[in-house]
Length: 220
Image (cartoon, rainbow, N blue to C red; front, side, top):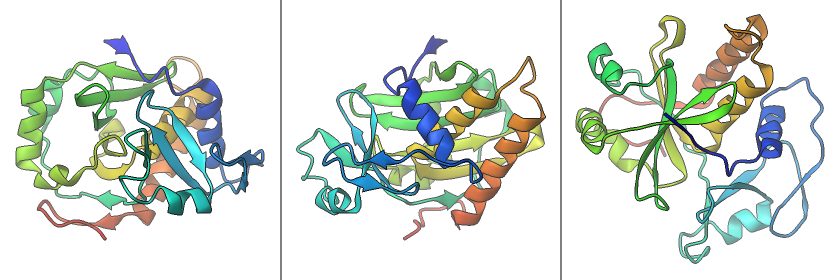
């Protein structure tokens, strides 16, 4: 296993964590393109050269709401969230991925020209080696994954504590989960607070998401 996601700075992880904690007063943030102030809920762009997430105001969101607008440098992170209750990923295939924890997310990185598997840990996002054949088998069984937008959308998996939850999400969502775990994990098992936070995170995500079956249907 090799550490990954180092380009997502500690300050950005803390920022994402603040956005996911409703009772915590968030610091004023600004658009990282034009410096205009943005609220706690705002859009993000991803810098394709270093994988860094950037806050964006509404005006810059409109500007970059076309793939050609960023000239191959920036991509707008969409807001599609899809819950996949019929997702096909049995225990044997999951175990074959050799991910040491029960949560992970997968996305296609243009910069690395491959699908990357990351899992949250107290140290931050950590990469697990993923064979192309293994991913192709998962896509074959779950064709909706063919619609994942490179760099900006991810498959988020939660199998912790007996759960079986699968979501197609904006790439910022898994990093919010990473930030939550990194900032709240205590001791060997994490502690009550972090697990309550994880449960709340996935509960909120399920409320926001559109639910589809295991087919080629896409959420609007």
